[in-house]
Image (cartoon, rainbow, N blue to C red; front, top):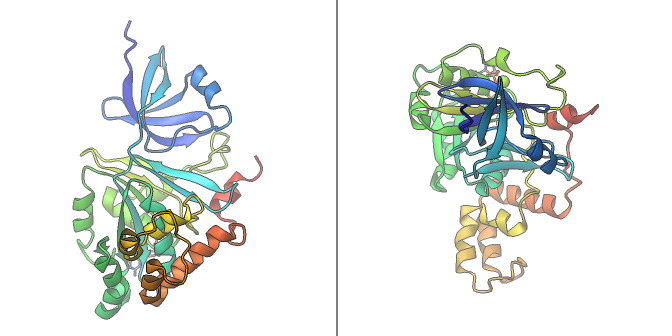
Length: 316
Ligand SMILES: Nc1nc2c(ncn2[C@@H]2O[C@H](COP(=O)(O)OP(=O)(O)O)[C@@H](O)[C@H]2O)c(=O)[nH]1
Ligand SMILES: [Mg+2]
């Protein structure tokens, strides 16, 4: 009797069921081993989409036995009740940004970059809809992020082959894809996966199995080994899981000042603080972002906003 453990990746989570994938066995449904289920009673979803797990086959059913240590995990947290792990083990956290219709605000980008900075993933910014703006507008939206050292792509679904460079870059890697609604994420996922079934693939939260879904991320597997983890539209990147120091360090500009700072445990942000000095020199949009995020940390509940996740949690 073969009882050897097989390595799978979690591709979807719904209720007590996990959709798991391996190249050898394809997509299967699995449940948790009883003991694991007891250990994790409080936290109903001990696993996150992207997790690698060892799974046993018990007659005809797959039972998840254990979790492989994560190399990265991305969270967002807008309030004590609204906190989610979005994806684990991705190499890249990709934000699809729209240059126009709708224009993604830099405050949103900066929150994303802050959340990703403690995830173990490399942030990638994809500026979409280049066809709707001129060259100067593209440069003005992207150049500062490029200057800070972030990996940037500029694409349009209407410019033939413009996503090939991105596709090539993501090849063989695990990428978490996000963006606020309307930016063109589904269109880009379709081009990356060369399929038109993306929008129909999304699991509806109203099925009995979908009812207890706490994460709607879905992994998509390409035969060449590339993995895309698609997320539902995210309205706000809550950064309450960061402490103040992590937030400051998430700004490469301030990070430099922080390194030069001699009073290692201060961070009071006082009068003759080096960080404060650099802070004054930040471009207006960046300093607004930081101020807004610092304010979120100080008065966390003022910024709480109901969004997609909250709604899907209702009626439990
Ligand atoms: N002009 C232009 N429209 C785009 C582009 N990418 C997506 N769109 C349009 O933007 C709208 C939203 O796209 P969709 O992929 O559904 O965005 P999602 O909400 O992020 O998944 C659709 O009408 C798309 O046709 C682009 O590069 N240029
Ligand atoms: Mg979409």
